[in-house]
Length: 158
Image 1 (cartoon, rainbow, N blue to C red):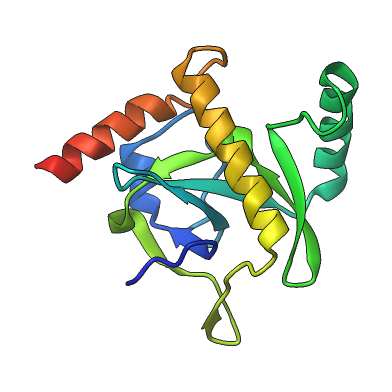
Image 2 (cartoon, rainbow, N blue to C red):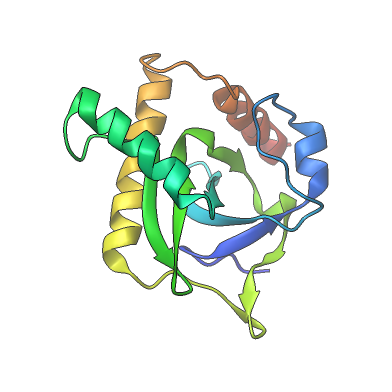
């Protein structure tokens, strides 16, 4: 399978068994689509869970922006996917390799690719910034994604 940047993907359940974290969202038997965020220089793909609970995340964004200033919420982002508003939970992103991708999320048999360049640019920027803050230990790595990333890199190098 060829991974397309900005596509939505279904993750294999085995990933969540091998790289379990207490705060990962449930995979729901390989039925939860994820937004492909960034493929980094090491070949790691950062996946951002999406949610239809837009009002819940809008409130969280407003709360965060009240503290830090308008436009400064890197934890969540709202965008239109297949004509519906969705929330992207950047603070719950996780690293993965193509080995753990089951298949692309499709609509009418066609893999869904996000075409909105503004949305893609903003998500990519927030993902990179969030990851950088994790690496600099300015944010707590509650999902242990840096440890998982290192494990995946080691697995790829074998």
